[in-house]
Length: 234
Image 1: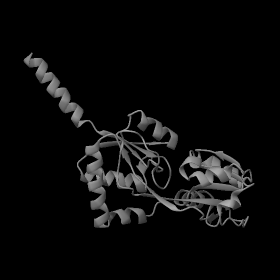
Image 2 (image 1 turned 90 degrees about the vertical axis):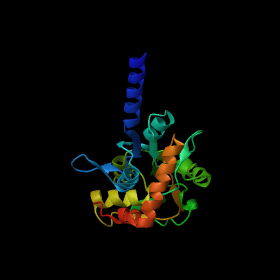
Image 3 (image 1 turned 60 degrees about the vertical axis):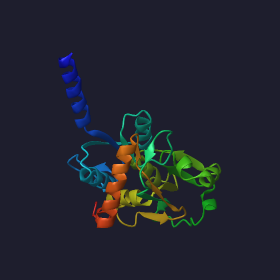
C-alpha cells in the first residue's frame, strides 16, 4: 500500500510538471513559422512572455482557425488564442488581441468600397467563419454577393491576383503583411469598413485564466506589450 501511495504521488508530480498545451492561430504576423521553422509572431511573443513571467511551462502549436477551435472544444488544448466564439464552461482573458477586419482589392483596380452595401454583387473570399465573426450585417450583405471562405492565405491571394475574385476580407495586419512580403508595396488597396475588435484567449482553468490576466496586465503596464507589437516582422 505504501508503495502504491508513493507511486500515485510520483505520477501526480509528473502530471503537474507537464507543460500546458497552447494553440495559436497560424496567421502571420500574429503567429507563424520563420524560415528556420521556429514559431514566432506578435501573439506568440505576447503569450510566451506572459506564461514565462508566471512561471508556466508551455508547448506551442499553430493551427488553422477551425482546427484551433475544434481542438479547444475537445479539451485538447489548455489555452487557445484568439477565440471569438463562446464555449460553455470556458474562461476568457481580458481582450487583448486587436483585429481590424478590412476589405482588400488589387492595388491597380481602384475600387470604391466605403460601406457594407458596396460589397453587393462583388466576388469575395474571406477567412473561415468570417460570416459569423464579423456579424449579422455582413452575413446579410454577402448573401447578395459571390462569396466563399478559404483558410489558406496563399490561395486567397492567388484568387485575387488572378482576378478570380475582386475582394479579400480579413485582418488588416495579416493581409498587409502577406501582400507586401509576397507581391510588394502597393500591390493591394485596403478599405476600412469594419470596426476594430479586441479578442481574448480562452482557457479551461480559472487559475490559468487569472495568471494570464495578471501577466497581461504587467506586460501592458511595463510597455513591453506595445514593444512586441512594434517589433519588425518581415
